[in-house]
Image 1 (cartoon, rainbow, N blue to C red):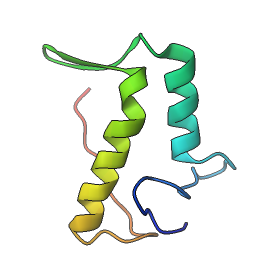
Image 2 (image 1 turned 30 degrees about the vertical axis):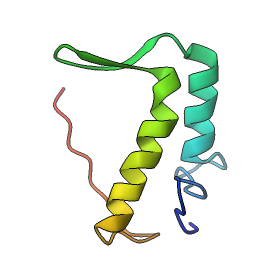
Image 3 (image 1 turned 45 degrees about the horizontal axis):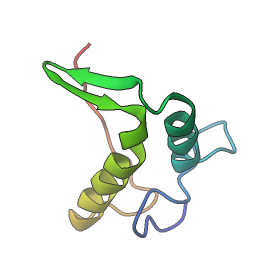
Length: 77
């Protein structure tokens, strides 16, 4: 993995040569107007995922998370 810089650039999914940003941009292009995430009354479209992911990466970086650090995501089903 490489420096996150201003986005997720360089993060590669395990067992894949495709990066997280590549997959998010592809999904955003293919399913732009469709809902990707719903939490209660708030919904996020696929087109918004790349910018939200980059914002999350920057926040993690500011908290001291470095490339190759592990981050756990907890989400209710």
